[in-house]
Length: 76
Image (tube, rainbow, N blue to C red; front, side, top):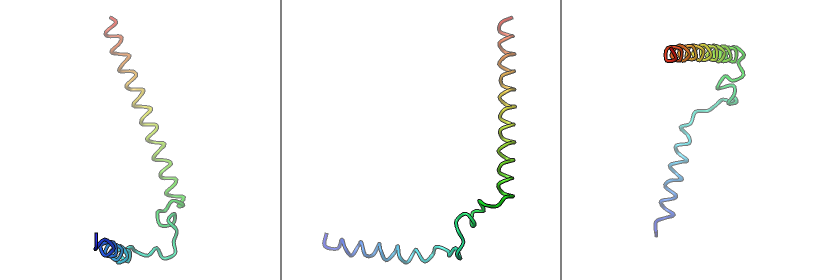
């Protein structure tokens, strides 16, 4: 218990020193760094999502037809 503040000070100094390892953003915002505002990226994401939805809808339709075929086989 006597050295509690010293241990705390060591952790604070380590944290301060480690914060210098974080790279500088050079005045850019997070959106600029991540590319969220790029129209080309947004179009690509939109197209990819659209294709994924179409694929999922086709897969569901295929599963439905397989279920209907199985039901017709069982019913006959």
